[in-house]
View (cartoon, rainbow over the protein chains, first blue to last red):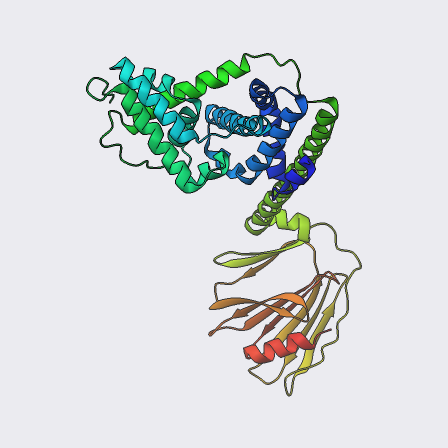
Length: 177
Length: 227
């Protein structure tokens, strides 16, 4: 399968660049998948499908530093791995609404918190969406492919994430500049 | 960095949010890297991937090598061309004969010993009424002096490419380079003196030197008729 994936890259130089990239991050990708999935075959599947996505968006990495590349890969693999696990367990989330209710409840209980503390309390889905948008600097369109959501769903997810953060911080006491 | 929407109404700005996200991402990656895998990719998967990656890397290395060789060759050719144009001694080594034009004279020289000796040419065309009044010959030179009338004369010399030949050009108004019968030639034009045409026959290692009180057209026609 990887042979076909490599052929999607236009030049031998790009293919070599991806090969070096893959060698550097293969371990990290497998470890990320392993944290969520139990079987070796599932991990290999997720890594391979993620590589197909990476090849399509390989030009994005030319502007990234090493930390951004690592976080991008981790979030991509986590997303793919969770999708696979949820499909296997036949779990369906209306994730945005469900998380919003949970977070609202937490905010009422806690009162003023810092941005960092509030962020730590967000569900993983919200954290990942904000990180992809504000740290990896992806556009809404980039995120649709990575998260496998529609554009409207991505916008809604980001909106909910920011609102949840604000609610947890409780605006009166938690202003960050 | 792409501009993000205004976070007015929120108790945080994009920069603060980015910092928090950075810390989160770094922590996430660190926590994953610290984990030891109880299993990794299967041997079959690793073998397939390794072969694919090695082939791509080897191919790219070859291409990089070809590109480097091509770049070096291109630079070498450019440098060589520049040296040949600017340095007469370099030209001498490659072309064997050299013409250098100075403000008051032109220098011709030939690298190495000419082979074959004096070559005898035939002059195919002469101006009306031209007659040979003198002919001289030795191992290295043959000379004809022609008269057309009391006031018009010209000299045709043939000599082997050998040591330096020096031609004073102070009396000439202009110098033009041209090709005569496939050979490099230089035309020296004067309004007050005789015109001159020097042809280098590299193949026969000979110089054809015409000094003539003739028009430029007749001079060139005479030169073209010599073979």
